[in-house]
Length: 78
Length: 206
Image 1 (tube, rainbow over the protein chains, first blue to last red):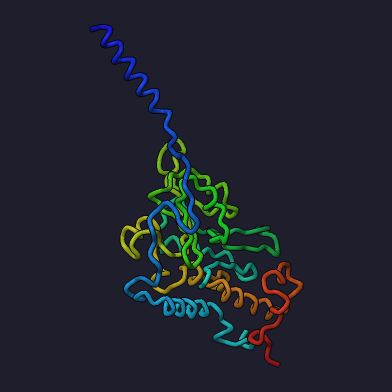
Image 2: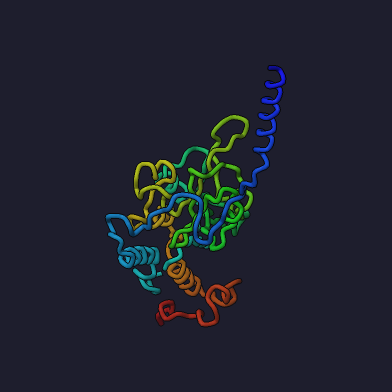
């Protein structure tokens, strides 16, 4: 009985010890253009733009030009 | 495709902190986190200059390179974003960033860092666009609504420009030429090349 317990105990210790010998990759696997997180939707994929990238870009570019007051007043309006 | 960039005109910035307030208000950024701040050089001395600084959405972002859990990604429009579900708050990105953009809420005692928070170019994050989950984690998604970042659009002197890099570079070039400067400005040739001296739109009327 004691011998059997000892053998079982030794077997458990050996099994636990060997469990740490696995070669599991422990570093991040980088892939060009990918990342480990969730995928994100494109801004133009919303219901407002319906997937029309060109429309979204046109709207953004028009809005960007609003930051240029010379476009409204002209160089002489400075 | 556009590459979204910020550009701050130090000749125009008046250190009003309107951009900081607009960012905090739009994104409901918690206390202790400043996605954007105004930095003043030679404060109080005649000739002082201020610039508004946040994440510059680098083309080759060092935060992306050092992140041990690979939680950063770059959108098609060139905006650097991250997934807060993956972030472990290690702070490597903070040390790597030359602009001090990554911010960490003090989430607990003993200097415990929460998940990193930074400027998203008002583009939200990897949750459903304009959903409550996206707003809670990342703030507003103005880009999906066809709007530019609130900081740039709220800037009273239009010192802070945001949008497609080519367009805001053209706006800035026109300003510099109108001020009577040009090729003598440091980095001008690198930015605009020898052919970019005097675009027709910037010629003063005589």
